[in-house]
Length: 404
Picture 1: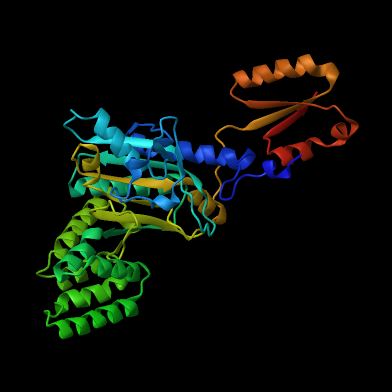
Picture 2: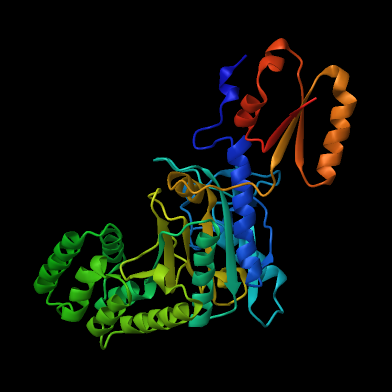
């Protein structure tokens, strides 16, 4: 037999037994959070047309997509990101709806990472999208819901870091940077490389001196250098507001201040921090972005943001914001923090010999009607009969074991 077929492809894995049960319980708990906020379920197909995730959308790079063809020659992909799929579906099915659309989902995404670095190519994700609402109250609702999912999972020590992509983008635009310079700055700020930002801006100043171009506004220069370190509580917003006086970037800070006040009403401000240097690989984000972190995993377990221009690609121009929970990352964090996900039903085991088969089945039927999850096991060998009830209980995690 070919031993290779017993294994999964690289970046994919089987989930079974206790781990699978914990995953399903967690999914059910998380799913209840958007439902409690009035969100309705939507299911989009795992396979979409390539153009739903094209480069003009600003999602996963084409090289990281699982691509193939249908019988008609259309290029198809396995869904790498739920947000464009939801945007496509909402644009089709809610054309005449004139009130905010609240949608939630649970499903799998597929990204063909080249350098895995511990990442999986297939992930279960749960998320929600609020379409047609542009205010700070919509931002706060989504961030509050993301926070509540962390609490529903059993986490107590975590942080939702919030930024605003327009803060950096408005600075870059007012400075008149070209596309290449903006990309280099984004990478440096994303990597928290303050020295690199200062060095790059210094080299740009030298180039301007040689070309007689105007000098970089000192306020913009100071802000760009400070961006990687503008993190913390509400005091960071006050600092950023003062530093950005007279610049369009200040509008982003005002928006963040409004969101903070609303999060205080939700009673969730203790889990909130701000990061003016936060940037995203998803280029469709236009406003507030956020990520949720906890110890036990280096990746964000929750992430989201505002994407006011995305639905325009699908023919319905509506402001939108959403978030997603990466279930595998969350499970890893819970396990490393030793936070148990206990089953909602206790499991019982009935051990029996061949002569007691009818009695065992009868008892199992009665217990199941009482709401007890009951498993039957025939003691077929001498080795099976010698094992103690306690050994069976410990091995299977049963609440009780009965031998007939």
